[in-house]
Image (cartoon, rainbow, N blue to C red; front, side):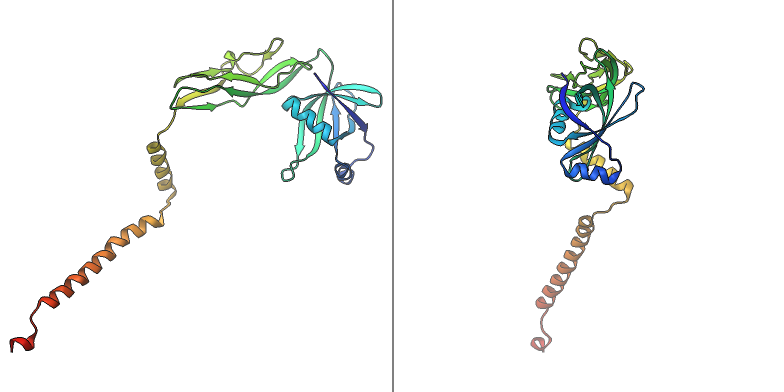
Length: 235
């Protein structure tokens, strides 16, 4: 279900105009597609952010523009890396019943067998789906999966009306043997050796016994000196 958002046509362009729009807690956007000229819009910040949050990576919005309605599929969202606010959105115009190509996230559910490591080899799969029926994600169950279990794209359970475009032989999830602490330490030591990393603690450990030997030597010499008879006493 597409969420309705009331949009305003944008007549000012450039970085200065975009900054003014953001200061008003709104978002600059553009809609492409169907051979039409791009439509430049201003969207309400909070409502748009919530719509994208609910719709996921391929959120479908119904934009109300000057009394007309336009279905728009989210294609690219620019986010400020520091403030984490929406800076700009690119949409593709779509129609009801139209087939679109989308990348849908893979979501792993369940717990594999003990002492296993679950690796998601493919974070998304490409599907063809109706614009108004795009799955938010594709779930892959690994419940009880043993070491050696491999799930390929062909084994994914897709919603009705969707077609897999990713190669069917693509490895999506791989269940391997988890490494022991000893194996991890050995790999780390090998990597450090290849990089020429020498820990100061190791050098100190070598120097400490040498220093201890020196102290013991001095103590032994002192003991021998005390044990020897004094010259005056023999005379």
